[in-house]
Image (cartoon, rainbow, N blue to C red; front, top):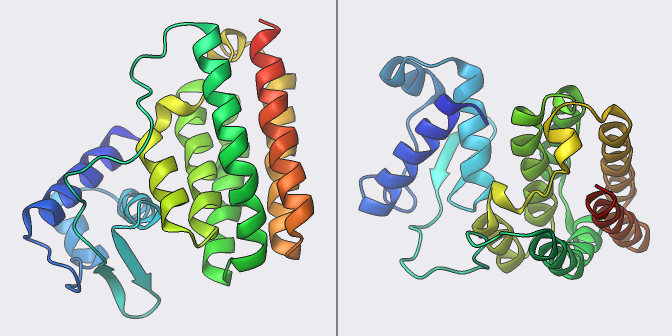
Length: 223
């Protein structure tokens, strides 16, 4: 996610928390946000996609986006601020494996066409930026959040949303931009998840996500 996108997400989230944008109220249109913040339409769309994935807004084609709920003051999730060691990151990936394999299975069983489109775009975006670590982390997180959102379970969605981008454990070689084979492997693993979700094959989706995350653990431990 770009800095401008994150800034717009933060402003809109604050307006929702403060009640300036109340539940049920329409979010300013794309054109209005472009004019107010001086950003591109792409930035606005990315910000709205992030807010939608976080369960704060709902977008209806031809009607616009509407506020679903104000974020609670209570936190829900796992604190990833204290990740210090390789062991910490492996444990987080093990935790994610337990959660996200079921999220992928539910996504295959429940996703609608709009959620599938969001998931497909997230996978495509990651594939385009996989060799650019600074962009790949945000894109990788967006992919996993899209899977959780497509599960139709708000607790799964909120849990992944609360973890945020720090949940993405990228090996040091990839952070330095010197591990293209590993980046390609992740692209292929994402594609396998998307294909299973598209086909509505819950068991294969579950297995594909497990392969992806256990492979991520292996890649992390090899370096």
